Image (tube, rainbow, N blue to C red; front, side, top):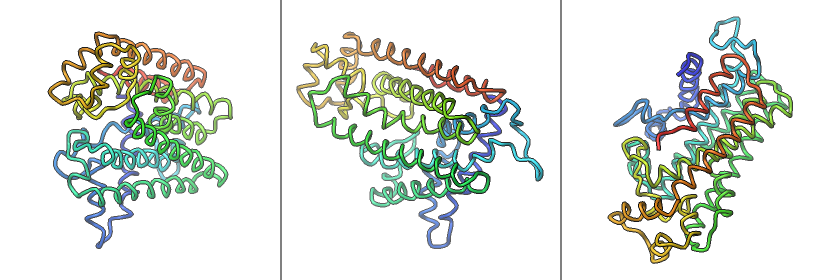
Length: 348
């Protein structure tokens, strides 16, 4: 991790805690605890592994800083505030939106683990968890409005519009994800609208908002946005691979889940299209946990894993092409390229 990333992560964590502290009041302290637990700050297993990597807020701040070659990345004092630091509430906003979606996804997917710990709904029940997710969503919208301290109103409104547009995209993607579970006639063409909303939209918002706050012109903002978009697609395809063949100790969730839950991930849709032994077994009904190893091996033999890897590589190249077009500057630009490479070469 680069020095600028460490500095940014420290600022992000402080800002996230400041935003979530809106609920740290005498009557709502238990409610506040639900959020601090989910964010990885409190409870059993709290710490860096529980918080996650905070990739999304990092992308916001790196995009902001990399638009200005002369940006002073690490200096903060009473007389000088680094330009990227002015975007910290927007960085917090996207991370809060991400975590709002995770709390709700865990309920909808009936997932009992998140980052190796019990999920919020397991600890406090689904009704309370829904309310906790709602709170994260509301605080995210409050956080993005805090940009008004440093930016003109028209920029704040545009940043808020980008964030809210992608929130609607998130719900579209989640709708498709859940509704697809009731269908057995889906193909690969059905996959892309789902993941464009469910995963790619938020990453594209990170780089788009970051470029906006960094003062980039419209064409450069679009290059940053498309970098985030294709980064998100590549990231999701890699996640699909991990969802079937990943190491639970690394991912923090069961690799069996996508097969057992009937997820229409890219490798699975590819396998269905081959109409081989995997497709025959899939059509027979739900896959039991004790079948996962055999069924995953069938899918790999029929090319599902290798196909998904090829697609991930293509999306990776597109992401890097748009990043090159965006031409990020300075230490932040180098750090963003490093972060992208790290994300796109996750352990499979």
